Image 1 (cartoon, one colour):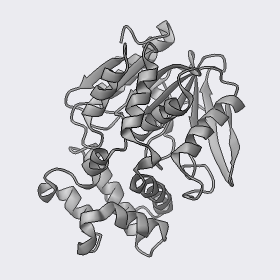
Image 2 (cartoon, rainbow, N blue to C red):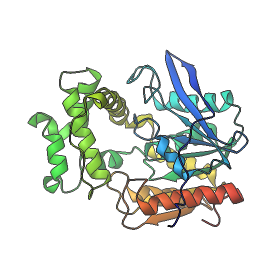
Image 3 (cartoon, rainbow, N blue to C red):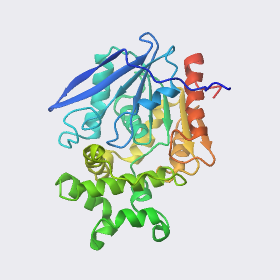
Image 4 (cartoon, one colour):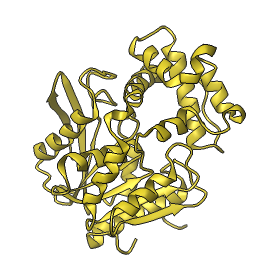
Length: 321
C-alpha cells in the first residue's frame, strides 16, 4: 500500500492566549519543531478561524507552525465581536504575535482572506520580517471580488444562489450583503437560519460537485453566527483595504521567495488575482491547477501546497516548485 505524502495531525508544543488590547484575546498554538522555520499561517474567512487540518501540508521536523485565530474568530474571545475589529488591528496583531513568540523572520502563508491579510501586512510593514510568502487563491477585496460571491454570473441559473438569497426579503436581494451585515450586527431573530443558508451556499461554491451538508447542527449554529457576523462586517467594508494598494505593495516582495497557488475553476476568488500578483512580484512562482476550485484539500491543490512547503524547508526558496 502506498504511504501518504502528507503529514499526520499532532498536538501543539505550545498553546495559549495573547491579550492584544480593546478586550480581545487571541488563541494561538505552535506545532512541529521549536527550532524549525517559523511558518505563520493566516486563516481565511474573514471569520473562519484556524483549521488544524492545514498541518498535513507542513513537515513537523522542519517547521515551527504557528496558527492563530483572528479577532472574534474561532477560539479567540470575545467570539463574534466586531467592535475594535478591522484589518489595521489584525495586521498589528500579527506583528504583536511575531514579537511575543520571538519568531524572528517568518514564512507568512494564507489562503483566500488569509492571503489578503498577508498582503496587508506587507503593505504596512514591508518585507523586512519575512523569509517569504506562500499564498493560495488570493482574495483582494475589490468590488469584483465581492460581486463574484454575492452577485455571481448567471445568478438566475445558480440554484445555490437562489436558495441562499431566498432567505432575504425580495426587496433586499439586490443588495444581499448589506442586508446580511445589518441582520448579523443587530443579532436579529433569523440569524441562525441565515448562517445555515450562508454555509450551504459557501459549500456549493467551494465544492460544486460535492454533496453539501444542509442538516442544521444546533451545536454548530452559534459558531456559524459568530463567523458570519465577522465576515459580513469585513465584506461590507471591503475588508478595510484597497485592492490597488495591495497590488502596489506586493511589488515590495520582488526578489523574496513567493509561491502563488490557484485553482483554475475557483468560484470564490478570481484566478486573475493570482496572475496579477505574479506580474507584480518579480521572481514569484505561480501554479494554476486546472479543474480545481477554491478547496485547499482538492487533491492537486493539496499536493501543490505540500510541494511548495517541502521545497522551502529544503531549499529556503520555491525555485524548484
